[in-house]
Length: 368
Image 1 (cartoon, rainbow, N blue to C red):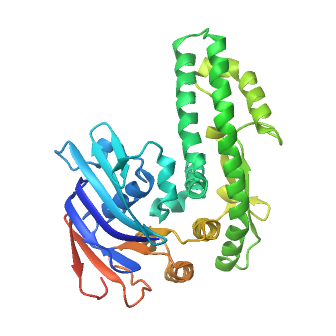
Image 2: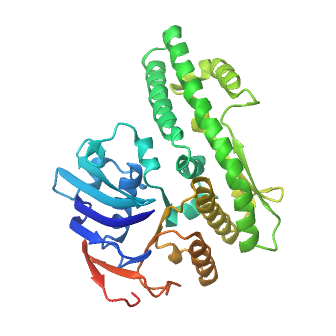
Image 3: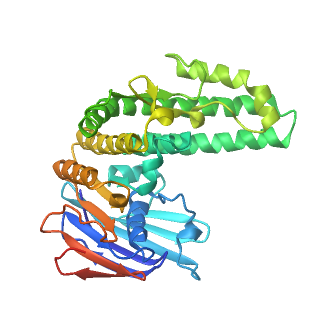
């Protein structure tokens, strides 16, 4: 899988960009605030249909404009595809090979991206939402049905919540209909997460042991968001929705389900979210991200494209070397942004792109 070309028009501060990516390792360098992360975000939007910043389409447009576009040429197993995201103030339209895309999950069958961002280092101690987002992004790359199920689940939950807020005595038949939609889509989400975590746990434990060899093992466990959910998740979820109805009606929102799930992480028998040191938490997140890359390569039989946004600023030299060494073994195309403050262990054939005030120029083959 290889990104050959990226072009943008009015995407954030990138007024106009068209760049050929000629190497398997591409460094995007420049001072802070110049547009390095915007370039990586543009690629991420093409690959997934959304921003890793959870930005609205209007927020990704260059200031003062009402429309923009991002386009990528990607080769997968010898077949080239054009992927385009057209942005307006209120919507985002995706096209593949000039045909409008109706299901975002279809993108994952064409291009797969794993992204490392400084905010990822907060997964270990941040909110459950951060951990759910990490797990879902990791699993969706080889379980595309998770994307469609999540979108349908979110729509059903918003409709149910609106009904709960609008009426103190909502129509029970309508509530029951929304409950069944939540159960159907929620079961798909839960099963995908379970299967994905099972595939990732062993790899994450192995990577953590390499990074922190003198600690007890890392274990991962999925809390489903449904109390006492057994083998029959659908039946447990359905019953939980019935039991929580009075509370949901009072609060005006759905309080049980996969949207309340969490990824629990322990070192030995101690909850890493509470007891792990900052260094240990960074090691956990590094192990999780490396496991994501390796798992995806093994599941798909093809290495994903990797995006690293200035992660060396959050890692010490030893862990930076460890990260790049591990990623080099995967065989992925790598795009990494840096201010140049830390020298990165990069191969000689690295392509260097310099970003200044939204303008991207290729530099001679020298370090940033």
